[in-house]
Length: 472
Ligand code: HEM
Image (tube, rainbow, N blue to C red; front, side, top):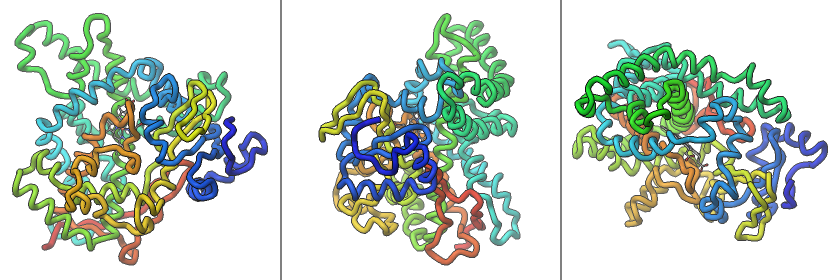
């Protein structure tokens, strides 16, 4: 435990406070920020104490390497990835560089497929008949299906991305990894391997995925052998192939590739779905912003067609998404890290070896010196600055910064953020142009209440959104 001041009680190593705070973390984090005048403080959690710092120390955390403040070790402590995703994936995450390089470079070329999958999945999921007026939809479920299909269109292509059994494994894996990881970590470390044997979702999910993936991988290897140089022109352009091309000789292993495909599914599905559900709820609650967004989306599509360039030209949409994620931040912990040795931050805070550290997201996002009238949902906070001549990239949805913490930062900054942003914007663009949405039975301006569970802020998963085809 560090010697920085404490919020809550240290009684019974903080467990009593940790349990009491399960539903009040947000308020505790806001109170601590004021009480300690933006200086570091720590609070107990079920998985140990966490030192929370303000965004003034963003650069300290961003610049730290894994041998001082480790993202990988913090993830193990928080999510037990070594048991749920497997040691190989955690110890050598080489697939991350495929996400950063090959995947990101291909997002423009793959845009037509991504957009096609979104339009088709939306139509399939909504299933509106010609005479349907408003139809009540489980929005979280709809978005999860669209995102899962769309990401898998890029990862493995048609027809597998639409296979119900395959997408079911993908969708379930994302959530069970988080749940089982938390459960495993509640046990003392010597018991975790044993507990993991019973609760880890990985063996079943890998087996389910292998049924589809291994024949595809083996067929591609066969064609590569038989076709030689001619394979280069014929091979698919998808994530599986980019990973296969990255591996040579004895590195080639179908089970390892399958596990990494699942890992990717985990990294992409839950995060994008939860973020976009928050955004969609804001959009349904604030119909007064729809005309400006529609105008922008319509103009960009008219200018560039349905292309990545059009999506990149939608600054208001970027701004709306950023503001939604500020008002309903997915996570309270920004850039969670574990100190691998005693680390002294630039303000003198000592983070002792073994302690966990994170940026206090709720407090940063409610700080009036960073966000004037922070309690107001102001969707054009970022786009207004661009209109006033500030740098576009600085305020883009894909740019991580000390006051935009969705993607973390530094060497581990979300590798898939360009895909996530592209998917979220393209889904919203399709909805804005083709459908109308609203909440049933809620007064204008009100959205279903977010639910804080420990450090996560979940949208109300029982809320339903009414959809109909656009009338005007
Ligand atoms: C809205 C959706 C998403 C959110 C909010 C999100 C958020 C994050 C965050 C907070 C981190 C850790 C950064 C840090 O601690 O500094 C991260 C890492 C990562 N994300 Fe995302 N992510 C999203 C979507 C995706 C997608 C779609 C993919 C892949 C297709 C992806 C792949 C990754 C990978 C591979 C890492 C690890 C990077 C590394 O350790 O080098 N993410 N993401």
